[in-house]
Image (tube, rainbow, N blue to C red):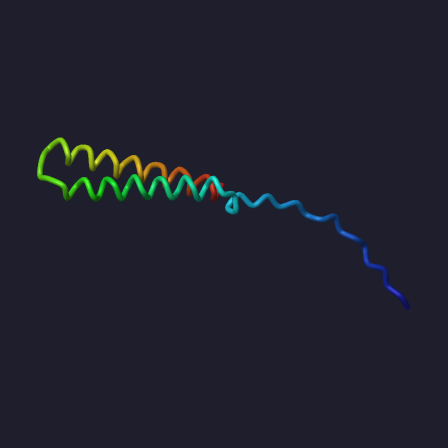
Length: 72
């Protein structure tokens, strides 16, 4: 008694997590955040503190945006 197997159609998976531009953008965002951290230690002034906070916020915003695009 022979059984025949039905061929199932191949699934097409589009894995967004393996695309290079996501990792390049993440590396740039981490570099922006690190620059904000280093600016914080340069001098104690209101202007440099504001610049460091802005750089940190921009870095975190980019990181979260890219991570959520990968998960989507």
